[in-house]
Image (cartoon, rainbow, N blue to C red; front, side):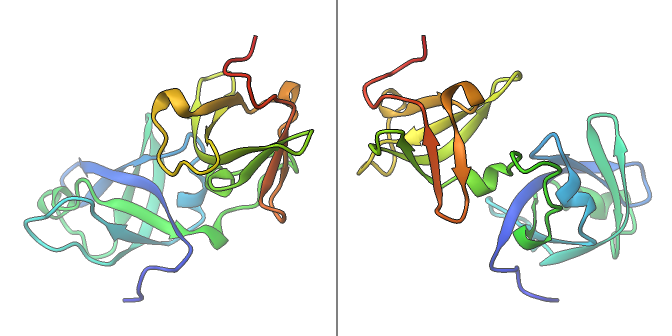
Amino acid sequence: MNPMPADAVPVGRISGAFGVKGWIKVQPFSLDADALFANTTWWLASDAPRAQPLPSQLKVLTLREQSDQLVALVEGVQDRNAAEALRGAVLHVPRSSFPKPAQADEFYWVDLIGLAVVNRAGQDLGRVIDLIDTGPHCVLRIAPPGIERPAPSQELLIPFVSQYGCDVDLDAKRITVDWQSDWKDAE
């Protein structure tokens, strides 16, 4: 078994067994599960102590959509008990294996987290720490300069829409926005 790739990104969680023949249910972390479908090997990790150790990776034999989740048959998992033993494991795949976005103005969230955010005047507004999916669009959660873990009241929230600029330059690791440093909320 190979160690987890250096560019591994969490993309889903095993939510339990599906049926009695060893299939697992997978809850993707994104509405677009292309990264899971693009990989035949998933690396596992757990953020909680486990009764039995996890395998370091799973070889995917079959993967399909099932309602709002995915179901997979993976090598070495023969029955429901073995599938249930994987419940809660976080699935990782290499970022380098993600499919290319369909359009130039589409981005994976993982690529936006950590980017610097500046406004058109060149003022440093902070860095992206996460995104919020509101349904119609996403919102950038920005930690102000010099604050590693901001309290919610310290965060700057900027809708990730063209109305506020949101020009992304991945090579420069920067997002430029039409936003003033003293705005707390959009009008």
